[in-house]
Amino acid sequence: MRLLRGLGGLLLWLAAALVGLVAVILCVTVILLPLGLPLLGYARRLLALSIKLMLPRSVAHPVEKAKEAARQ
Image 1 (tube, rainbow, N blue to C red):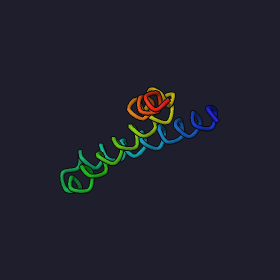
Image 2: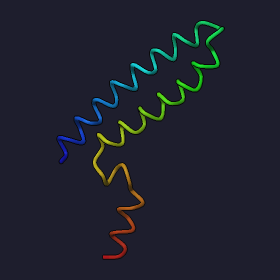
Image 3: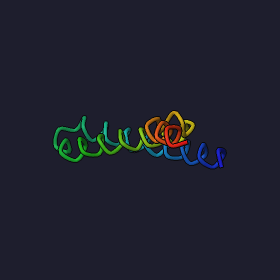
Image 4: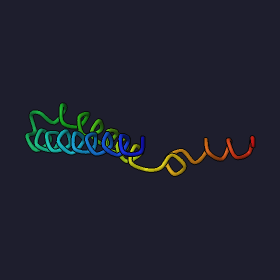
């Protein structure tokens, strides 16, 4: 399962990098700036999600793990 999460995180990271590159190119052209800014935000969210996928669950969701530990 860890391997699949890591592979999914890697693929999502690559997609976020590609979307970010397209967004930066769109932001450089002043006419397409309104399209580039939301795309840059979307790339940031994709990057954050990919990092969460690559991290262990206890690091990515510390509050949920603390609640589980408190229940036990």
